[in-house]
Length: 206
Image (cartoon, rainbow, N blue to C red):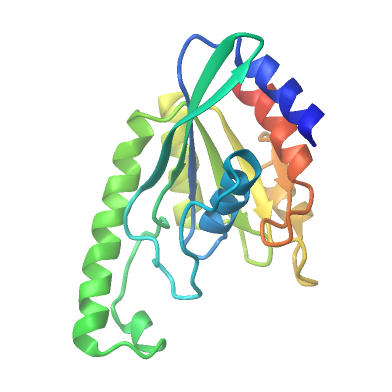
């Protein structure tokens, strides 16, 4: 694994600008789990908390100024975990998780603000990992909206088909819906196939 990261760094060192990887996708698609896996691989510590409650990440989490020295050069990069993107946030959905009505309404307001913040961050990211739950239908308004924004801004991105450890997952369906884009199947929770994801990042973001 250490040799892989040396190759990864040697590619990235050719860049003049700071590498900022934004993680986008639906709530509970596994963005924070993936961010934690990446942070653990590169820094030896996780980035944020994970939860089964949708919109648990309600603000951008940024691990910045990660400094790695290679052959006398220093590479700085940021990992940016964003709130889940949804076209509608209904406070009633939070009631199912034991929240009071007041707590649910506050959570919905925070989630809406988080979505706005995540979209604004598109102006500052170098590349995007669009995380999709491979157990769900990928053809959603939120996914289409995110991809449209990325294409309009000409931001390179990779679709991450997450949760392949679950029997009902189908990364092939995601590939068939978005055949023109790079799709990498992984299990962020189990750390499966992350090597292929990192190599795809080198090819896409170098």
